[in-house]
Image 1: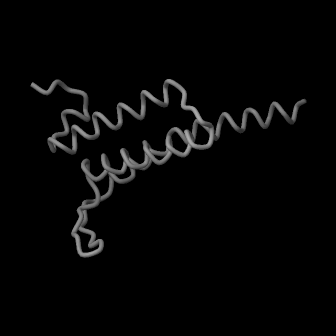
Image 2: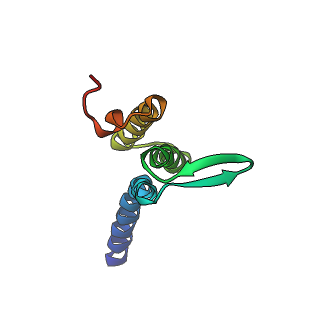
Image 3: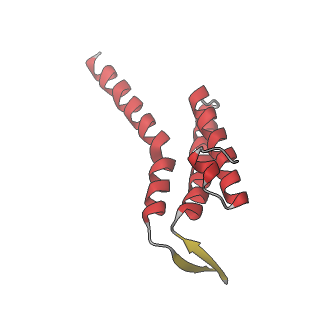
Amino acid sequence: MLLCRHIQLLALTVKQFIDFIPLLLFFIVYKLDPRVVDLAGHELTFGGIYSATAVLIISSVVVYGAIFISQRKLEKSQWLTLIACLVFGSLTLAFHSETSLNGRPLW
């Protein structure tokens, strides 16, 4: 009985950590000094707010997609997080403006 309780607590802790992976990746990439990376003949700038936003969107889709495939469901908070990352991150990348990501008014 005690072993089951420890396993449940461990599963809850791992689940909470998995939910924070996209955010951790965002901050890591954001803090990097911007550098140009050559990828298959294309030059990409890696580091800074815009590449960090792209990493946030991609990692959110991958993490929550994997959870959805394995469990066949997402919690409401996970849906809300995924939709917010997609909407505000896409606005940031489309308009090349930090205001949509920061949550400040656009006017």
